[in-house]
Image 1 (cartoon, rainbow, N blue to C red):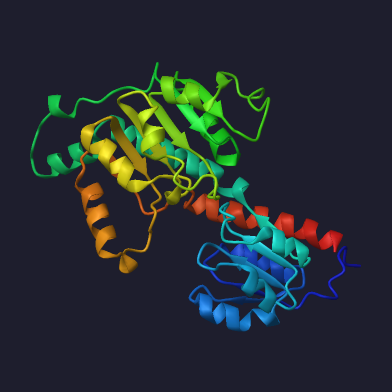
Image 2: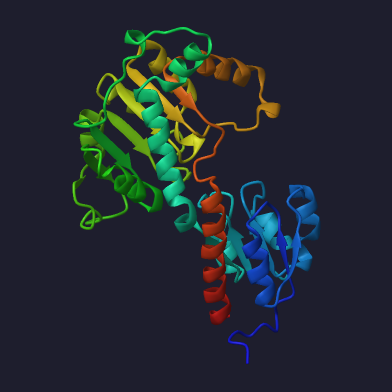
Length: 322
């Protein structure tokens, strides 16, 4: 006998690329899966009334009007961690379970953050470009070591805590700050629970691991940066809108901020840039003290499989309660 009541289960729409395991496991649970990674948000809205399950990544905004159109929807599964694209309170009100899978890609995010930081600290991007042109400048590419430096981690959830684990062997002093947690570093030897002020005044490197909410939009702005010690390095693998880009660029140009590692940006669709945004990002791209990536933290072959596995286990739990 099946362990779940699947009487309501009919169809699941998968709107983004995923590991094959996700489709295989959903099918074994009794779902008919429509895998349509090229579907547009508009097409999804037009068709969502036919589905009891929805798997998304980042392009679908599950807002109030979308939920109103989802007449049979019982769950939304997010491949990843960013839940700002789902109106969770309204979904809950409508009896729709909202599931994410940050456990699946938290290590990938942590390794990406470290990789970008090491590339910045050792001038690897500049050195690589120069060597390819037979330019040999050892002294000009002398870097700095992380050992003995102070790392400030803002947000100690799945990715922030995993970043602390990844850093544990580097000999850094780690200060963590999470506004909504207490006693959260007990299982992390070498990590000190601190205040935001302590991070700003003591950290050589600050790494953001925050969700995007009204509270965290432009969390790092001119006022925030002014409270940091001169020469700080900023790392952001969370959400681009957590940093006010214009303020960061100004600080990078004066070297108050020594460098930045950015995997996320306020606008991640160059095809939609306004004239002002083209100017903004041209200034950013011209800097030699930044390492930039196209939102690929967490985007590994291994994390693709892990996120699918995490999502399936959570869907099973949801089904067992419905």
